[in-house]
Length: 254
Image (tube, helix red, strand yellow):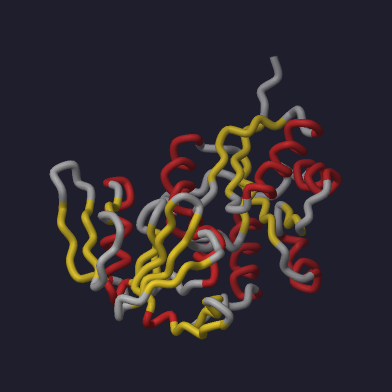
């Protein structure tokens, strides 16, 4: 039996994940998808265990960047195929040294072309490519204000005044440091990419919290963290033991 090439997908948009998975499974029978991750945090724990041959990696993810993921992994034993929406000028400038660089929306021909080059590039080629791409990638631009629809108005809300974003039963609420609350139409997944990760973090499925609003942290017996903010919120904010180390590092980072 022919040994299949294993591949992992790191992509935060569900539609893009499903589309890429469908095309690989349908048109690339030599590839077996061994892992699918929706965030950098998830990929950091899963990739060292699954050890794929190829990684399909989005550059801008909800909780961090693809570059950050690669820099944080202790060993990069796979080859990288970036999937992104950068302009064609940047792609032309770096494509010669990449395994490949797929422009969204991804086409079947693009995947086949990328996989045809697998094994033909050495590690130095990949590292050179990553270096070039890091220089070309524009610095992310984060919002400093949100426009919040309230009654018949649009209210500009300074993100420095936001204590947290909370979601429950498919509805989202913004909590300000002065105790004011506003309903908000976007999900936490839609909100997070526009926030500066130095200031905000996805604490769990229900909360995005502002670092400056954290009053104290209690370490529980099971190594979870209980986070207290400077405002009252509908439920306790727990950070799982798997994310506790990352959360503490983020809290004290410069």
